[in-house]
Length: 308
Image 1 (cartoon, helix red, strand yellow):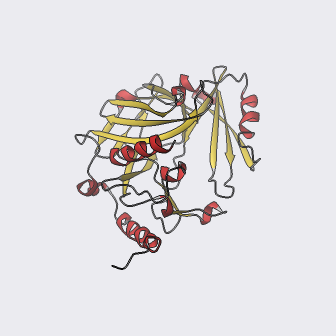
Image 2: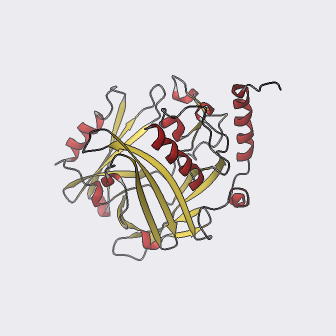
Image 3: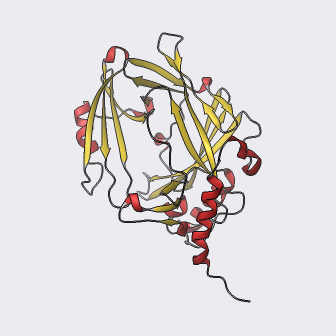
């Protein structure tokens, strides 16, 4: 029997995946299924690295985020070492700041319909709210391995499907995701742009300028950055800083956000209502496939345990 060169199959598999993305939408539950037991429950899994404070070695955690109507449950499982759970957003409420706006993002207000998670944000001391929701589009990872991502010295020229098989390179690059593995691509829509943070994001910095100086030094390669300051919150009385690190070599653009809220400095996330949709075509760029279903997560967990 003639042997098949698996390297030659990689471009074909990428092309087939690109075709499956055409028309990708809510009707695809019939193909991929739903991670939850009903239309109002949905689970997304991911992995993160950190430092084990006891051994000073690398730690790896699996994070399962389950969304149900009126509820969000975060389950963290140490895979390697002891991960610092301080970095995991598992609180039921967060503060939201936008231009002339302060409100709250609360788990009790979550609405789930198939793979769409709605999280209305209510204005402080008011019944007014604005819409914020995420729809998780799907892409099959069955048969995909680390070689299906082709890096480049210029991030804009990289192509393929980036998974945690690439982020954990000790796993052999010939190992492929099993049948039933699914990647979730989050597409977020919001009525307005905003910063969000909670008490777990509080830092030890005494001033926002101090936070900014340290944020600029975040990367050791001295990559170029730009800092923008904002006035946000009710009456625009709070201050925010955003450090934008530009894409360098094979590393994408990165945002670091800080908030001065009532005299304390917090790290924050930023939701940009005008942000372009994430790329879903592996032939036109990089598809970020680091959010997965339980089949893919179970496979990754087993391999990380084995090789790390």
